[in-house]
Length: 257
Image (cartoon, rainbow, N blue to C red; front, side):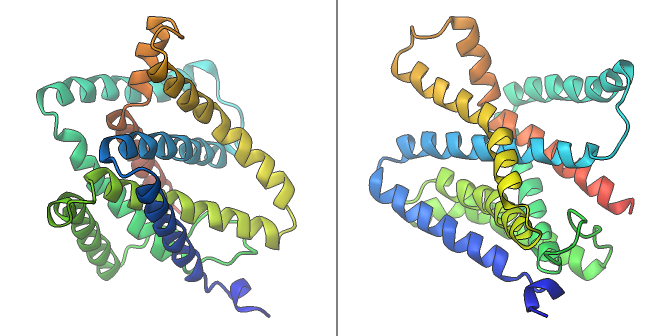
C-alpha cells in the first residue's frame, strides 16, 4: 500500500512552503513597492482565508440537523457582541490585532503537525487536539518565534515588509489545507466535486475583493455605504478577529473528541 495512504503526509506542509515561497519571490519581483504589495497580500489572504473559515463552518454543520432561528441567533449574537467590543478596543489600542497573530501562528503550527499524521483515504477532517505537554510546549514556542520573526525580520532586511512575513504564514496555513483537500479528493475520486465546492466557497469574498480594488481605482464607482462596509469586512483586524474565533471553535471541537 502506498505510504500516502498510511498517513505519512509530511509532504503536504512542505509543498505549501514551496508554493508560498515561490509566490512571495514572484510578487516581490513584480511589485517592489511594499505598500502596494501589502494591498495585494491582503486581498489574496482575505479571499482564501474567509473561504477557509466558511469551509470550516460547512464541515462542522455537515450531517447535523438544521438549527432553529433562535438557536442561530443565540450562537451568533455573542460573537457579534465580542466583535463590537474588539473593534472599540482596537481604537484604544491599535496594536491589539497583533496579539491575535500569535493565536493564528499557534493554529498554523499545530495544524501542520496534525496534518502530517492524517491518512488521505480517511473521512475525519483532522486529528483530535493533542494533549501532550511536549506537543503543546513545542507549538507555543514555535508560534512565539514566528510572531517575533514577523516583527523583527523587516528590521533586518529592508526589502521585506511585515506584511510579507504575515502573508507568508497566513497563506501557508490556507495553502496546506488546500493541498490536503485536493489530495484527499484525488485519492477518494471526488476531485471534480471538490473543485466546484472550493470555487463556490471562495467566490463571494473574491468578488468583494475585486470590487474593493475597483473602488480604490475609481472612488465614485460604488455608493459610499457599500464602500464603508467593504472597508470594515476587508480590514486585516476584522479578519484576525474571525480567524481567532475559528481557532477557538476548532480547538474546542477537536478537544471534545
